[in-house]
Image (cartoon, rainbow, N blue to C red):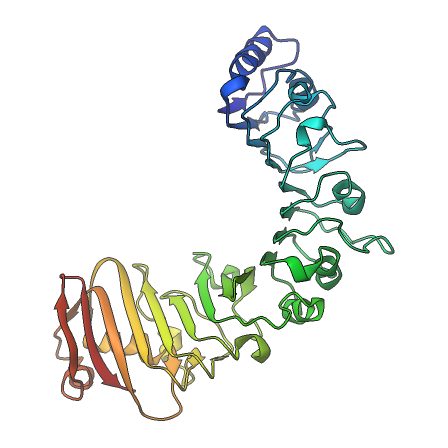
Length: 385
C-alpha cells in the first residue's frame, strides 16, 4: 500500500481521519506500507507525522516493510510505543529519510533486521536501542562528525552497510564500529583517501576482489561527471558512489581483478592498471562511441597486459565502422606486447567505409574467425593488439 499525504491534510481535517480509517481497515493484510509526505510549494509545511503515527493503532500481522518518505530534508520522527498496536511480528524493514529519535524501542520494531535512516551524532545511542541488524543504511545531506569515545563496537553483526554522506572523515572507525569482519556488502560515497581508510578498517580481511565495474552518472557537464565504481568477489562487494574522474586507483585493490566492465561514456584520467585482468566488457549506451578528447591522448584508460577477451555489447542494435570498433578497444585498453585478442560483438553490425580501410584490414585480414554469426546477435573473431 502506497499513500501520499498532501499539505491540505491536517490532523483536524475530516479527510485526514478518513484516510487513517482506510489504512487501519486494511492493515491486517498489508505486506508493505509506504507513506509519502508532500510539502506545500507556497511556504513552510510541517507534515503531521506525529499525528499520523500515533493513530496507527491497528495490528499489522503480515506487515514486512514500513517506509516514510519526506520531500524535504531535516525531519525528525518519534515512533510511538503503541505503533501497530505493538503487534507487527513480521516487520523486518523500516526505511525513513529522516532522523529517528528513540529512547525505548517500540515493540513493533522488535524483529527488525533492516534499517535505513539519516545519520546523526547520536548514532551509537540510536542503534543500541534496535535489535541486532543485518543491514544498515545511513544517509544525510549534512556533514556530521562522529562523537569521540563511544564507537567501541556495534552489538549486532550486519552483513550490509551503506553510507551515503556528503563528506566522511571517519570511515575507517565507522567500519570498525560495525565489526567490518562481518560485513559482506559496503556502499559508501567517495571522499579523499577513501580506499586507504577502507584498507585500514580491515573490511577486506584478506578477501580478493575479482570483478570491477565502472559507470557514470550521465551528467552532460564534464565538471559534474562522477563515476560509480563497483568491486566484487569472494562473496563480497564494495560500491563507491560519486567518484571523480581523477580518482587515484589503489594498486592493492586492483591486483587480483580479472574482469573489467565499463560503459562507452565513462572516462577517467589516471590509467587503471590491472596486471591480472583477462576480460574486458564495453557497453555501448547509445551516445558518442569515443570521446574526441581521448583520441588526442596517447595513454589508454586501462593497462591490461594479460587481456584475452573483449566483449562489446550495444543497448539496442548498433552499426559501427571497423575504425570505430578499433577505437572503442584501443583507446580504452593497452597491452604491453602484441597479442591476439578474441572480440565478441553483441547486437552490432560492422559497416564498410573507405575511411576505415586500414582498421578493417586489422579486423579481417589479420584475424581468424572463431565463431560465425550466432542467432543474429553475436559474432566472434580475433584481432591483434
